[in-house]
Image (cartoon, rainbow over all chains, first blue to last red; front, side):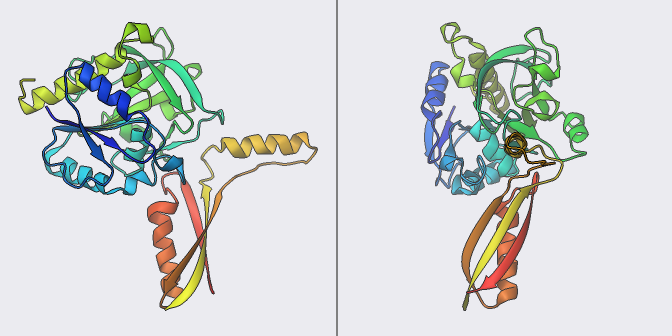
Length: 233
Length: 83
């Protein structure tokens, strides 16, 4: 299976993401922000970091990179699975490949913390992740408050795009479990083959790191891709 | 071709929370000012070439709508002056 990991100027979780995929038995393909041909990859990850120094808005400048136009074409023509993590999620939102936008955290400060994340909608993209399942994952962002224009929240939930939500440790949805002011505690959304989340699964790959739930999430994504494409990995 | 300076002012839409504006308002109140509200935006100056003022205005508007502002959560205004 060929999974591309895209590096933009200012990406800084690309190495961790490559390591995480390698630990799960995949040899990732490293791709630069000017890449124009993604016709031979089976999936792509936009990793976390601070592309273009977060200038203008997080992800705004990276969303105009040539590789994003390539991704857009592959998503449209063959539903290429794309996963955006943190800054990668911001880039996908700025590129309008996902709805909404990520605005500065409600507290006005960078948040770095472990969070409990609930899988609100199961998706064939993440095979084996069950609805209602709880994951322990770290967040690290200054612009992570998910925002939807008035009236769009119902559509996101109604169209099964509301994928992950911040919850308390016992799995309850309430405002105190919301680390950044995201609308409806949303931590991740899915539209078609494109998924984005603010937490960092690649930083939760083993119990000694605090949690192995990131490995579970990434493995589910790889399984979803394998089953979809009939790959024997 | 003539030279123009377009000033694009980007602000958060009225219903979008502005943590930086809120923090600044709080400090202004602490300093003794009776401040109802502070909203922080960006002012972006673009020097560009265009045939005339109308084209410069149209180009700057396109830049604002496609990159300088995110219409999902921001609004913008464009002012153009010939240099």
